[in-house]
Image (cartoon, rainbow, N blue to C red; front, side, top):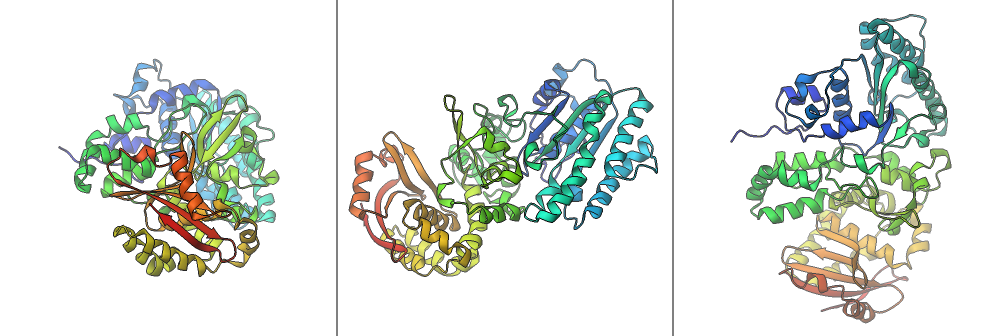
Length: 526
């Protein structure tokens, strides 16, 4: 069998199709989106295929029928008209130090289009250039123009924590995007994509005709890979990975699900896997933490510090639709950014109260949170921990000696040098079980051990469920209580019942933490 070509790092639809890279057919959704509205905005986290979607739209509006042979869109599109396309990738303007540098970067991005559609030297600003390009493309071809803006918010995200730069950069971007509404009569279709919501950047006060499809169930799977797509289009790839890992196909699917699945972008849409990580897992034949390793969103962790984000409440946090659209200037929480950057996702939706419940999507994201939060909240780097405590803790777990593991954890907690900025926060939350729950979760994730927090069962929620190859640990924590009470709660609520038919040994653990010593005080193992 010919080896698959996985599109890792390939974001151009034309190249992907011409060079026979693997492509999961999303063209039916692409076609439907172009009929949804003439002006469309879509928000998705980084590495979710937004740029590939943008170049797919580029090829479609150019009428490149040859690139779509064999795809679903061929059954839907009958005309295949060609339109002039103005496609701008704003991510190239990231990292600029001044408003003047940002303007220069945007103008440089428009320069190749000026070669095609003409240039007027009196167009001094990026917005004037964009307006001129749209008008000349329309006049030159006699057809309306498709405008595609990829990563529209990239320059702004870089300066979220710098008020002076943020104000200057926002003015530049407002001027740049202003022609999109002013040129409405000349525009066939306008598509913008990025990480943050439109209203959060406050640069679209005049562009009020955009249709935001980010939470629309119809397009929930337009970026990402559904479980059905995984088990059909990628079944052969799963078999190869399973053989490499030395486990069954079913277990491989379960591991992929735990590692990369769980993203939900609407109240009733389809859940999707992270496509970037999934492709790299097949390329490397290994289940790595590829998404977080591909880039650290420092602005997000800075916002979490700024808004004193309570990390004990990230799983199960409730939000209204307004929270997703809250303007940056009015944000008193990092919640919108946590959702938009992919660190939280929709878990459920209450149609009566219109409230969303959010949570961490999967194990890979939890590891990313560990990497980012350790230095921010605790003052430690991952390697500082792994060289000492983690090795001893891991060896104890491998021997099924949980008593020894908890003694190692006791010593570890007692010696944590919490950073100055978090000391007051520590005082506020160290009497809450959620704080220790999250701290233990961070420790398990440092070891790449799969752990779930607040796991639902018929009679409540278990604090932690830790899954090892041959053992499942069901752990309940108590701050204002005893280890015995914690163990009795596991028994009374039946937290371990769902795992009794798993085949692995099930161990119940009641743990008591001390608010005085800030460490494990007592535990009972059954």
